[in-house]
Each structure stands twice: as structure tokens, then as C-alpha cells.
Image (cartoon, rainbow, N blue to C red; front, side, top):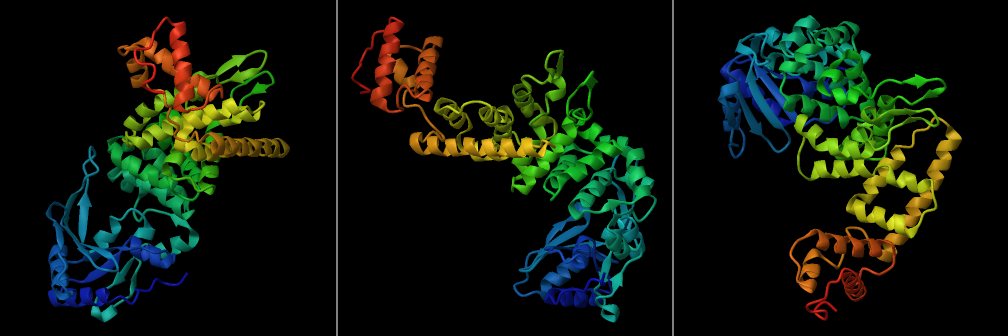
Length: 476
């Protein structure tokens, strides 16, 4: 692997000139250098100087056309400078010390060596000089380039100290290994297992941020396996860890739902699923351990796991500090409905069943079908092919019924307001029953979702209940 080269960006020479005038030796450090070595695009640059980082940022800003505004974060001793090409953060070299109950360090000015030593991993402890006498020279005190070549995640110092000081680095180790498809060096890996309990002092928001980055990686299953094997997953997401394992009674054994879930997750990634569809894959079987039963006649069952799992979604999102709005509701819907398309494969696909699925899934029908395809993970190749063929028939039926009945985001023409106005009723169970009866008739294909037909049925249903319309012609 060649040493990374500074791109020919004028900003680097401007920083070098300003640093030389201030006599602050300056370096590009960290992820930008790592990504240069890996030929990856990065737009965030960290500049470390042996001196006052805020003062250097302000000096650079004065030298740039238009004198861009420098944003100063005094509490952190950093400054941010936007440029057309990149965003640059400036900070003075520092050393850190930690208290056992906190991952927030006490910071003091330090040397370049002390600053590199406090970095999380060797691949992030790389630097490129911005000094006139050795401009562009690689600084690699801990063989980070060698670790990039070996595809290895390793800490610069004793990993027990690194992870005990800042336990979030354990999640970051898993995240980088997953994103880059690297191995975690054995001593570093063992230190994660030894220090896993320290993760409890980290805020849930920071943990979830790293978790989402793992989920968004090209093969997130790798990260979840690392978290499970080191014991981190059992601490940060115990419900998911409970999916692991196989129970056997006689000849009856169920599949390992943890590894099945990871396969579904990877399948969703291959199909182009976004973060929330990936979360639906993670949670689609989350309630199986709670609903597992053994039936001597048919073996293991997980009846109702989709409904219970859907009920769990809001609480899981709350615990993990995930959004509580539309994203959560979408995941909840997908978890609740994930067995429905598969059930249609096993029976004669009626228009009525398809209408109900379209009605309940609404605009999420395509995402639901993607999740259900991903959920077909049988190791029996012929069985899997048969399921996928039948599933194709269901998808074709969905398309045909949708084109005919336009049931995506379907809204019944007979609303509660229409019912109350027609029969002069107040909100009541009776109104709900009439509304549901009209809806069922539409979904069964007995009447079309058109006002005249549906209203005529409403009048018939009202008559059966002894209700007389106040203004029967108002909605004809």
C-alpha cells in the first residue's frame, strides 16, 4: 500500500503558511488520512497543531477569499472552518486523562506524540505534515499503514486502557471492522470482551449512533456477530441477543433465530433497503423467544410473534433512543405484517386477501414485499426456489388488484362522520360497527369503494340495526 498523498488543494498551502507564521507545527490527522490511503472519498478534515487550534483556524480564515466565518467551540477548544471543497476542524494537540465513572476526559495541551497516542485505533493515528520543511510527509508512529494493509483494527496503546478510558471505542472497533471488512486484532478483541461492562457508562444516544452506522454497513451481520461474541450485544440490545440458540425436543428443533435474522438483514441490504427497512429486518422475529411453544404433534411454534413484536417496537425504539415518529410507525407496520404475504403463498390467492393486504400496508407494500423476500432463507435450495416462484405470483396478483382497485393508501368513502350525519348518531360503538361492516364489504369485493354503492349498503346495514336515515339523499 502506497503512503497517502495530500490532494492538490490550495487550502493545505494556506494552512501551512498560517501555521508557519504562528510557529504552530500542523498536521492533517485521522480519518481523512486513513481514507486517502484506502482511496475513499472524505470531506471532513481534522487539523491538529502544536499550539492553539482556534488561533490557527482564525488565521487561516483571514487568508481565504471572502474571509469565511470561523465557528469556535470554546468548551472543546476546537474551531470549524467551511470551504467549498471540504469542512475543516482545527484543534490543538492534547493529552487526556480519564476518571473511571466518565468517558469525558480531562484535557491538557500536549505534544504530537501524546495526541497520536490518545487516538482510538492505529489506522486513525495517521498524519500528514503541513509544515514547510516536510510538507506532505506521512506521520505513522503506530504502523497504521501496516494495519490498513493487514486489514486489522488495533489500538495504539494497551487496549484495556483504551477501552476502559472511553468504552464507546469498543463500539467503534466493531463499526470500523464492519464498514471496512477488517479483523479486530486478537488482543484488542479480547480486551473488548474483558471491558464490555464499561459500555454502561456511555449514553444511549452515542451507542445507538454507532449501532446505526453498523446497520448501514455493506454487511451488518458481521458487526452483530462481533457484538454478540464479545458480549456487547447482550448489554446494549438484550432482546436481540435472546434470539440466539436452538432448542431441541426429540427430533424437533427450531432454527437459530439470531442467525436467521442476520441473514434477513443482509438480504435486505443487498436489495437496497434503507436504515428503517433494515431495522424492520432486525425486529421482524424479535418476539419469537417470548412466544416459543412446543407442540408434540407439530413441533416448535411461535404463534403471534408478529403481533407481539409489533407491540414491542415503540418500547424498543424508546429504549434505544430511536425516532418515535413515522420511522417507528413504519417499522411497527412492517413487523406486524411480515407474515401476511408469505401466508398468501401457501393458499389460493384471492382478490379479497390481496385487497386486505394492500389496504393495511398502504404505501409500504413494496417495502413489505422486499422484507418478505429477504425472509425466505431456507437452506433447502429447491424449497427456496419454490417459495420465490410462488411469491412472484403473489406480487403479480398484488399488481393486478392494485391497478384495478387502487387500494394503495385506500380511504373508504363511508367515514364515521358520514354515518353519524346519516343516522343522527354520536360517536359510539354502533358507528364503529357500521364503518367496519362497509369496509369489510368493500375489501371482500361485494361493493365498490364508490359513494353511491357504499352508501346504499350503509342504509341497508342501518335498517338491520333499526336505524332510520335522517337525510338519506344527502350522500347519494
